[in-house]
Length: 88
Image (cartoon, rainbow, N blue to C red; front, side):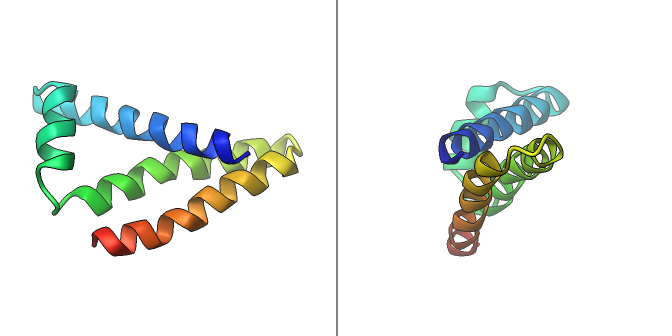
């Protein structure tokens, strides 16, 4: 479940990154290097939006009664809270 949660966060990061890049006419490389790494102002917001993908994944798996996987995803979500607070 933890690995699925981490992969879900990475997928969420790239989904948001590609959407942001598409809507602003920039490349994903620009998003990663300039917006995420180069600026501390947006880091907490980007991490939070990436973790929202895990929340959707959690509720989807919960509907299918995959409780053990949900525990790992929930752990990743809870451990991301201090990261978001630190980046804030």
